[in-house]
Length: 230
Image (cartoon, rainbow, N blue to C red; front, side, top):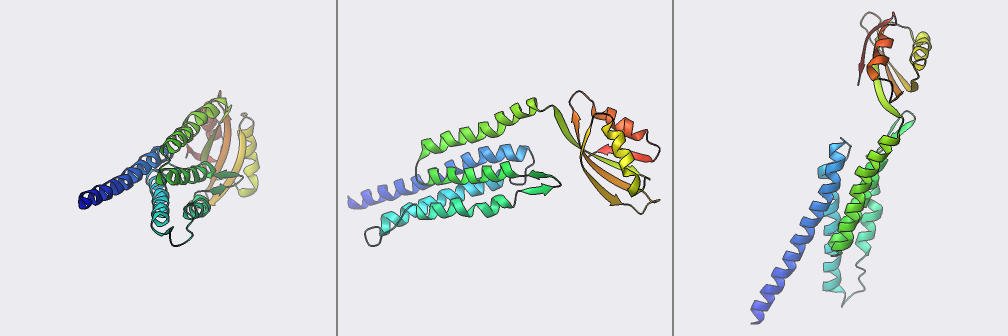
């Protein structure tokens, strides 16, 4: 009889592990899918790995506590605390500085939040993990859409092939700004073809001004050969 009870106990133990890791995979995948859809540096697979890894850390902590707490002073939260602080190196890798703009902060925050979801799942706090996942997902999707609707300008990149000299670029920038467009950054790329210069502009266009209108206006400049949106 004791053999049957031991087998049932082991089956329940492994079933609990499988359920926790699969739930971590599911919840991490939900957040990762949203990031992947927006082509962010850390996407579907990265969020799943972070969440499942965090869950495994807490399962391991619980296992260590149950097995050795009678002999040593074991803290089941210690490994989880290391995950929360250690995930920063991965989040930092998703943050990119481009000119005056910084990108990747939201993805870094989502990675940290997903690691916390994984910790909750790993310790068996399923309700908290589900509620947190819903809140995180709504924050990334719904609030982003609200912010986009409230934003009065759209950010685009223009690549301009021109024969203009570096010192005369201000004239072209003024032409763009006269259309009601804000130039936030300019990058110069030299080209060996016929002395051509490539300018990469980051601009903000009011929503009521079509992008094609700006492109056509730039093309009217006598030094410009080609303009396209990147």
